[in-house]
Amino acid sequence: MLQAPRGRAGAALWRRAVAVRTMAGAPTVSLPELRSLLASGRARLFDVRSREEAAAGTIPGALNIPVSELESALQMEPAAFQALYSAEKPKLEDEHLIFFCQMGKRGLQAMQLARSLGYTGARNYAGAYREWLEKKG
Image (cartoon, rainbow, N blue to C red; front, top):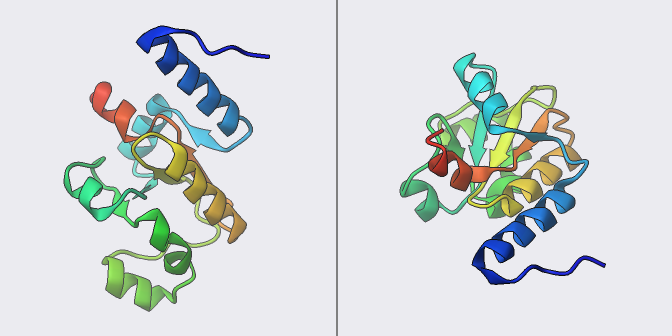
């Protein structure tokens, strides 16, 4: 059985190891891959944090749909989605639908939800907004 290391650095390393193990097997995207997809215009980015969190800063080009609204948003008719979010509703067959939050948990939940609704190109940016800020996107 794994034992949690002591100290602040050890605790941070432990949390990251647990998060990686939790996301193992989940379709994810790394920061370098995300940068490449965004530069080529091939990614649709969804910030699933609260409106307040997203208003304080987000990854450029991201559409904010709080995770609490995501299921109903992805089941809307395209015109209703467009009216509410001022963006085209993603299609089930779209590739590179990338979900992110602050630390990774809500992004993972959002990706799993989208996949359960048939969005086969849904992926999680596991580094989340925290990594984006730390590494200056």
